[in-house]
Image 1 (cartoon, rainbow, N blue to C red):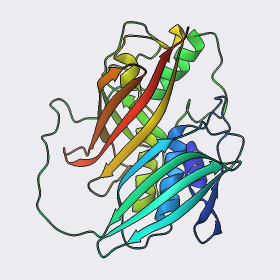
Image 2 (image 1 turned 90 degrees about the vertical axis):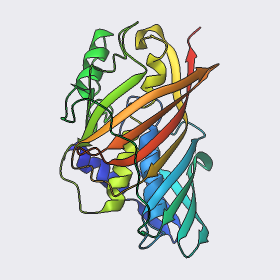
Image 3 (image 1 turned 45 degrees about the vertical axis):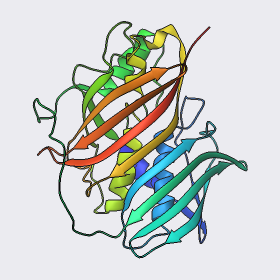
Length: 284
């Protein structure tokens, strides 16, 4: 089974009650669950309580590091069912403690005025250094063997960054990334799942722009974690095709940094936007 198939299996939450779901986590060498994994599962939990309306935005706070060796329970609160908009609140818990708090808004699709920003200049052909290649070679340079089965070293999406992210190289890299991504395998014809996979993928590299704004490398030693994450889905998403993901760090101050990103289709259409605030503390 490929890692995309595994991710889709993890996103297929078990329904415990009308608005209560349980999700499993993949084996990991990391001490905490990948934030994008909980984000995608939380979005699926909210989606399963709404009929006929796609999600248009989500706003999430990561409250505690999740334990990858324990399942996560998702409680959905049906805040409002309006004529055009539907609102859900999702709390993800492990051992009774909240690890994620998220609001998701859904809207009945309707026609309206049209405008979008210009696509970025440059080639609209997929290119760049594979994320998996950078992560594996970087860990090996630190004297470690890439752990088998860890989905962060072989993610369920192909992610290629023009010029590379340079996480393991001090003084190199940029607070601006231009990446291409797509699902690494066949996707079901389910728009809700395409949104969930994109939510997962959006957390792979966005926070890296905050790290590289300071020209530091992984071997210098620092603590980084996502604090909160927001997404807006402007149009229907197809993660089976290549998407251009432009990312930049806007500001870093104290121990927090703020980054934003935009997803474009290959023809330059704006599909989705995201922002993230991250924690960044240098090791003493």
